[in-house]
Length: 555
Image (tube, rainbow, N blue to C red):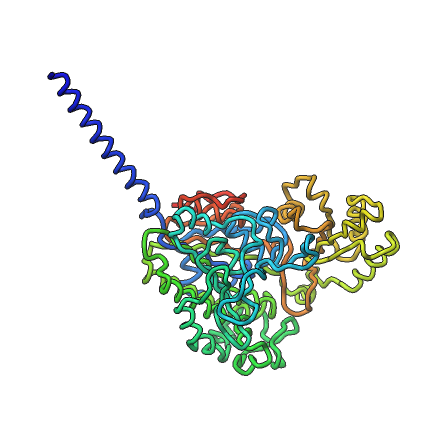
């Protein structure tokens, strides 16, 4: 009897311990989602067309609260590059957030030729959804063409959809692609006569009241004012002279020189769209981002939220005025002030040390080739008319028809497969013949075929970059590479798209909770960003990620 009593006591003890362990396990599992080790908010900042050297060129003119705060308190990756071609806005934003390259995520350009539908498609275009916030078709957008998840998607999945994700940019693709497939919202700016932030039915059927209120305010209209330099223009010694022949300017103003009366110029420059090509477009973006943080309660609990902000005005200004312009310098000095304003707002509303920020770019830009040529640096412009005439002559002479080529865009030639077959030709032979023909043209540096990209593995050089940007189902049959600093563009302003350092070398700054203070000249690549943030949050890497977490950044 005593033995039986003893056994009952022992069993009760084990049962109690088991119950206690089960309760503890449940608490541990719940705390995985709510952890003091994770930031309350991750803010991803992409500065459109920001070359790395803008950080160093303008450093002495920056204040202490923007770029320099990130450098002085965070981690600076000084040798950060894109590891693929082409370096455009759509692929750039997708690569930053998915942790991979166009080869995998499928965003091979801003626009590309769809080999199935036989038409050009837009990276964020989606006619199956409708505009929200405007009657215009500017809202017919979604991330459906992006084939992999972003780290924001993985955070949503990890937190059982409790962690919010919101994307914000003047450009639709700058808001949509970073936010990913599961985002609560993505908002972009529709200019012209409206000056409103809009979205699509992919996310919602009606704008939240706070967005309606923001649009109804005079926020956008308040920036249609004079744009003059933030400081005395004589102190802008880090850029070229204000009046030169290398800048585009605005319709309605004879010279591309300060000051600019934006209200007057807006009449001839698509209304509110003019703001996109001024630093006030970035200020407007900052205003809206702060409104989103407040209205959506971002970073107000221990479940991590993600805010993806893309500053697009820098790209518009760069395209118009060029890398070396006073306008670009003023835009970055003003962006520095906007960043300081955003960080101060985060300090107050989320909590200093409770959020994490990274800042990078979607691509760089070449200095205006006509300027480079004027100072004896090899540079220039592609003669598209001559190329087209020579190529058409080659096609007619060799194949008896021009129809064997279906489309040319983004430096890629798409062949008409049916025509190739009808002529009894071998596809790889046609690719090779066209490659050899184009290689003889002026200002062509290299030419590669789709067959080569699919059958040969490259580990270094532009060949490796081309391969990382090559998507078998979406890319063309022949890929063209122009000479260094030779572009297909106007003779004023600048552009991008190559695998050269002026297009690939961009900033990468980390700052805030969980980030070490330091710097490195070790090479990092854009796809490393998403795995690094994923590692910081303790979540799955994006499903197609090929980058590696930068362990030396995480505290």
